[in-house]
Structures are given as C-alpha cells and as structure tokens.
Amino acid sequence: MKFRYFIPVFALISSIGLAAGKSKVDLSMAFLSALEKTETNAIDRSLINQADAQVGKARAKFLPQLSATGEYSPANSYESEQYSAKLTLTQSLFQGGQYKSAYNAAKATKTYADRAAEASRNEIFSNVARSFFKVRSTEEEVKNLNNTIQVAQSRIADLRKRLKIGRSRVGEVLTAQSQLAVLQSQLEQAEGQLSTARDDFAYVTGLDRNAELDERISAPKPKRLEEYLELVSKRPDIQALDAKWVAAKENVGVARGKHLPTLAAVGNYYFAGNGTREPDDWDAGVALTLPLFEGGGTQAGVREAIEVASQSELAFKQKQRAAEAEVRSNYHSLVSLLEQIEALEKALDASEKNYREQVKDYRYSTVTNLDVIQALNTFHDAKRSLDRTRFDAQVAWANLKASVSQVP
Image 1 (cartoon, rainbow, N blue to C red):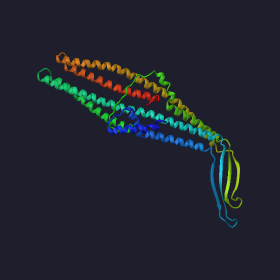
Image 2 (spheres, rainbow, N blue to C red):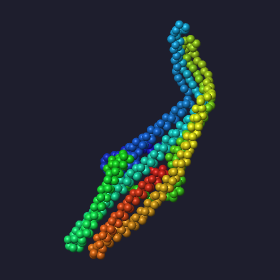
Image 3 (cartoon, rainbow, N blue to C red):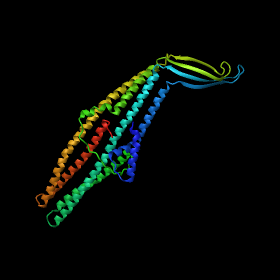
Image 4 (tube, helix red, strand yellow):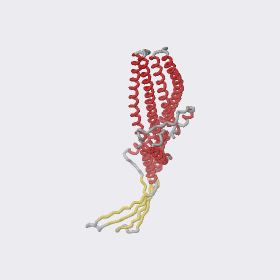
C-alpha cells in the first residue's frame, strides 16, 4: 500500500497549483484528489488498521497471561478474617490448534483488507475518469452547439440580406430560424447536463465544481486481449477474495479445535495472606480441560465454518469469471470506439467539404437553402459525434486499465 504515503504530497502540490490559479486539472490530479479528499480511502485505511489489530489480538494468545487476584472474608462467629492476594501466570501449551488457525485467519484477513483497498483504488479511478470525461464531453458539446448557433445566426443574417434584394424567400428565413430555435433548445439541455456533471465531479473528486479540466491523454490502440487476460489473476479484488477464502478455511480449524482438549501451565505466587497461604508461597501445575458435551454447539459451529468456507470459494471463482468478462467487455468496447473514431473522422472530413460546396453553390442559386441547412446539420452532427466518441474511448481506456489494475 505504498500509494497511501505519497498521495498527500501530490495532492498538496496539486491543491497549491489550483489555489494559485496557474494550472488546469488533468485526470491524474483529479484521481489523486479523490484519493485524498473523499472518505473512501480513509475508510479503507481504517479497515486495514482494524485488520492489523486483529492480527495483534491473535498473536497475543500465544503469550503468557499474568493476572492479580485478591480475596477477603470478614471474621464471623466461626472463623477469623481471611485474606489472600496472588499473581497468576498462565501459559497455554495446547489449544487444539485453535490459536494457530485463528492467527493464520487474522493474517489472511489483513491481506484481504490490503487487497480490497487496492481494488477500491481501481474503482475510484474508473469513477473519476467517468466523471472527468463526462464534464469534458459535455463542455465540448456546449462549445460545438455554440459554434453551430453562431453559424446559424450568420446564415440567417445572410438570408435576410438576400431577401431584401429578392434572391431569397421568406420560407428560407423561417426554416433557418426554426433550425436556430432547435439548436438553442439543445444548448439549454446541454448546459443543464454540464451543471449536473460538474456537481458529480465535485462529489467524486472533492475538487471545486468549476475547476478547469484539461485531458492530456488519448485512448491508444490496446495490446492483444490475451495480454490483458493474463493480468486478471493479479487483480487485487481477486487476491482479496482468495485471502478471504484462506481465512474462512482457517476458521474451520478454529471451530474443529474446540472438540480437542486444552492444556495450560499455571503458576501462582502469593504475596499477601493469612491462614493456609502465607506471603512468598507459590505453587505451579498444569490444567487439562477436556470438552465432553456442549449441546451440539461445537459441531454446529464446525458446520457453519465449513459452509462459510464453501461460500468464500464460490465467491472467489465467480469473481474470477466476472473479472475476465469485464476485461473482455472493456477491451472490445475500446476497440469498437477506436474504429468508430476512424469512420467518424472520415465522415467529418466529407461532411465539411460537402457543406462548403453547398454554400458555394447556393451563392450561384444552384441549390436551395434547405440543402445548405441539411449539409450544415450533417457537418456539425458529425463533429459532435466524433467528439463524444473520443471521450467515450478515453473512458473505455480508463476502464480497461482499471480492470487489469494498471491505474496511475
């Protein structure tokens, strides 16, 4: 868990830069802020500390136990007052393997907490990337709509000039105005989505909702699928469930050990007293305990522990299959989006050329204004689709990296 020690430094540097207003927020900075400022990472650290304490408690069972005991009986008509005080040292010699199994289970639980925290880190990265690129994608959508609106307004102004000299018709102006109204409605919707996306970004990262975002990565072409599938076994969530399974199997040993006898060495030192025990007396011996009957509770505990271990094994195997399916899905999604980007780039180039040709031909009255508007809509729709797909590809790339535990 080395990242726990470096996060505060990087986050502090990022925060200073933001406060000074000299830097934009990229995905890595947003991720570090989410690790530092949101509660998830702190909760994970608390769970790790709890697991550490459980290991300490299990280890303490192997060590000798020292206690002080005092007894006092007031005088009565039959005997004088009696009192004694002693120190008792107890060392466990044999506990049916319970202590060893409990210690191993505690260590496995600690491993589970560590790996679960790393898995949480991957999930945080995916959430931050999704939120980050949702803001960027919606910002680009607003920008594209504003550009389209400016072109539409310019188009209306030109049509009105042509209307005055009789080279355009009223219907053409009304068509362009209708297109402008639709664009303005879409802009209002996009601005509302941007506000929501920024609220979500602030919640996920702990950063200011109005922070200026700047993506500095692009989705590269992935390697072969098999190379990513080979990394599934190293995923921390898989390793966490494996450790949980180990802990459950060790707990079966704890439950079975309760059927066996226990043996302990006991020594007493009397430092005060009267009657049969005088100061500086001592004794020592061994205590053997053999469980005979507990109403079936011990055997029921064994059955329960076995079922928990079986359930943990099934959860581990289920997660393995789900992880492979997740990697395949993220991989194919990224490949598909990259292919869409190539096709949309060609479509954008072709639609832009067509729009320019339609504008040129309209000046010579060889096409109608409807043809120009349709060409303009096609051009800007291609631009908006391309931008959205590029951001979707970046999210898919982030998800693929998170699914094979290769976050920055």
